[in-house]
Image 1 (cartoon, rainbow, N blue to C red):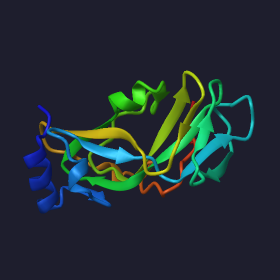
Image 2: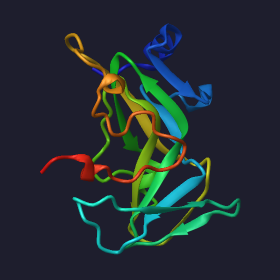
Image 3: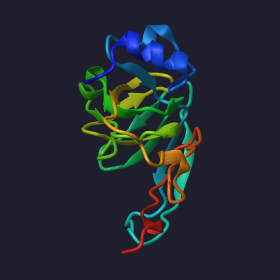
Length: 178
């Protein structure tokens, strides 16, 4: 079951869902449109190592936009800060974004109950495309949780992506033991 627009508004009133800044026009029938923040990043090294802390370089999207190219992996961020305290949030691309050949996540479309922060986007493109800060880029949908949560994500000691800032966050795989 997916929350409807009325239920999203009810949950926001209760404080179980938080979206800042909130724009009523971005609320769909059963989703909320999120926009591309002003920061993008790319990895400094061409070859990434899953056991290493791979460093990224940040750059701001200029007013005139920025062209993304295929074969370059970009990290972006949502303009919106969100909190989800009683539902499972899913981030999906918008059809308009997909029709421009833009993928906004490679695998990490699901959040956890207790996620608080800006969403890091894993961006790749099929052909060169110019993007702009503030453009609609994805949509959040919310699923109710069946059963009681033992420990919310923002309360876990090993939560590597809790409290994400308004800049993209690189992979923290290197913090895992393997």
